[in-house]
Every structure is written in C-alpha cells, then in structure tokens.
Length: 42
Length: 493
Picture 1 (tube, helix red, strand yellow):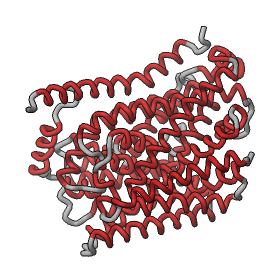
Picture 2: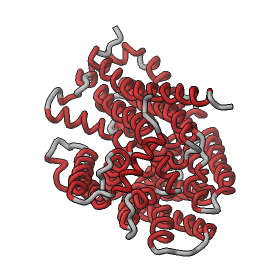
Picture 3: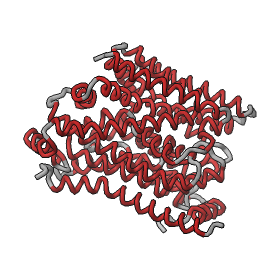
Picture 4: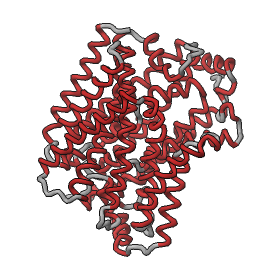
C-alpha cells in the first residue's frame, strides 16, 4: 500500500526504536527518581 | 543563482554569528571560560550543539546523497547514529561529568591524566599529537567545503569562499570561546533540523507522494528498497551495514562531543539533554535519507549524488528558502570546524603549555594564548585547503574515526572497567589510532571496504584490555570508580 516493503519498515522501526526506547526509558527512570528525591526537600 | 534575497539571508545569518561571538566574549578570559564555557551550559544547548558538531557537512550533502544512491540500505546509518547518541547520553555522560567535576577537568586529556594518575603527562602528549594531526586535516576539508559552497551559491570564487569561511569562524571562536561555539552550534543545529524535516515534507508531494516515490524507486532499481541493498545477504552486505552502524560509535567517546558533557551545568541537564539529542538526531537522519530518496525520483541521473540537496533547494523553494539552505550548509561546516579548532587549541594550551611544560602564566594570558593558537591552527587548515584538496579529502575519510578510535575505547574502559590500567589505556589510544590509519592504507580495499572505525575500535579495546590484564591495577583508582558509580546512581532505576 505504502510502497515500502515490510522489511524496510522493520529496519526503519529498529533504526529509530532501539535508541529512542533506551533514551525514553532512561529519561523516565531518572525523572521519577528526581521527583521522589525532590519530595523530601523542605 | 545569486540573488539579493539569498545574499541578505546570508549576511543576516553571519551578523547573528558575529553577535554571538561578542556576547560569548564576556566569559572567555580564563581557560575554564574559554574552553568549557565555565561549565554552565543548559540541556538544550549541549544537546543541539553536540549533534551539530557531530554532524558536519556530511549530514547535509553526504547522507542525502546516500539516500539518493542506495535508498533503504542507508537506514543502517540512522540505526548507528540514534543508538550511538542515545547510549552516549544514557551510559557515558553522567559518570564522565561526575569524574570531570571531581578533577576540575576541562579537557579529555585532563580527565585521562587524573583518572590514571599519569604524572609524566603521557596522555596529554599522545592526545595532542592525535588531535592536532586529525583536526588540521579535518578543518581543512571543512574550509574546502566552505569555499565550494560560497562559490556555488554566491559566485565568490573558491579562494575567496575559503577565506570568508575562515574569517567568520575565527572571529566568533576566538572572541567568544566555547560559549559562543556552543550557542552558535545550537542555532546551527536548529536550522539544520528545520531544513532536514521540511525538505522531505515538500519533496514527497512534489515527487508523487510516498507510495509514488517508492514505486518509482522500485522501477528504477529494486535494490533501492532492500535493507541489504545491492549486496543482498552476503559478506559484503553485512560489512557494509555494520560499517554504517559503526559511524554512530564515535558519539560514545570523541573528545569534541565529550566536551559538551563536561560543560553541562549539572547532572540534571544531562538527563534532559539526552532526550533532546535523540529526537534531534532522528530528525536529522530520517529527514536526510528520505530527502535523498525523494530526490532520486525528482532528479534522476545526477553525476554526483551529493549535490542533491542544493538541487532540491534551488528547484523546490523560493529564493528566501534557498538562502536558508545555503546558510544551513555553512552552518553544518562551521559548527564542526569551530569545535575542532577549540579542541585543538585546548590540546596545545591546556595540555602541552600549561600542564606538560609547566607554564606559570596567569589564566588571562593563557586564554589569550589559546585564541592565538586557534588562529594558527585555522590558518594551517586554510593553507592545506588552498594547496592540496585531494589529500585533504583523503584524510577526512578517516579523521572522524581516527579521533574516535583513539579515545572512545579508552574512555569507555575507564568509566566501566575497574581493571583498566594506565599502560593499558595508553596502549589503547595508540593502538586504536594506528589501526585506523593502517587499515585505510593497506587493508580496507581487500575487505569489502569495511569502515575503519570497526578495526580501529577492535584494536583500541584489544590493546586496552590486553595490556591492562598484563599490568598491575591501581587499587585507589578502582575504589574511586566505585565511588563515582555510587554518586551517579543506577542508570534506569
């Protein structure tokens, strides 16, 4: 339908996805960590 | 192609760069201010400036050309760069920042010297040789590109174009120091991102829509839509794909990129900056490859695929935006060359003059010396650009991987492997760099043109690990690494 074969889409998804998931996972983990640490401040 | 509109856009842009130079100049009177902007940069600046530095004119001309020439096979480059940038921010940036703050380090050799208790300044001398040799050649190639760009867009002639490029970069780099470099890189990164996202959005409808482009590429050459390209699943195909992925390895430890982490205000800026950096590099690379693919349909049969971006900019956009595209090509050139110049200047002034030769000159005088060294290195690059362009381009093929292979394996081992020794790290630097050069000179053409980054990294790691295991570890350094890890905390939890 889109003209790009399925293996091309899979490669593109992996190309963007691996790094993006790694970074978002890290960002959310550290941000929640920062939030909980900040909660204890007077 | 020259029009008053294009000239106006260019002059306006150059005026902004000069203003940033003057503004940054207020903090460039000591070494910390001149080389790392006083370690006070916010997340969005370090994110965009590290990407703009990492991606030279190659991104705009080379990667769009790859999309044009090999289509979907260029997706492997996207994978390498996105993974490389993400891994650098997730795994490397925070421990590196923690270490360099503890040592009050302002250069990567500062860090290596302190980390490995190098009282003889061997890391500084080896680093200075590698950085200077690679930077002069790399900068010369960027000046060559500047000469060609000014000549192509404005008809200045090649030599005048080289001089104009040099003059602008030297002004804001010497006057404004790293602060001006980082903020001008931020502006240049935003411009590059805007153009690379816009270009395919305009080009695809003009070329018949997404399905139309894919259909036309399939008809022109079915290999353009295959992940392994014309090679198929063969050794040559795997070597090619792996080589493309390896381009991204350099983001993990090249000193011109690590400097951004050092210059961050604090650890929280790094957490925020990583997300910006990854989104930015996705926009850069996906935009460039897809623009090239659409360009293949719009302008088939180009003798040089790397001219596809100027072709598309001239044909698809009104003069004002053509001017913007010229500015963006220059931005990519300048954002790389300014960082390289200041890196080489720091290698000479901080690592050789101040620390190795033991100069007792005050900070203001050393900072002034740094500015003069920046000028001298820039002029050396200019001389090379004006006399021997062929050799320059031969050099630039491995300058990126030469610097990366010398520093990255050693920096990664120093951050994550307690058993790394001073002798191992020195062997890794020399081995990684030498392997890159030797591979290009003697082996590359016999091994499917495998990108030199891979043997360079393999040799760097092998030498670092092998020699470290054969020499006595430093217990104090090992305990310090544990302490740094505790201070930084876990990566994901």
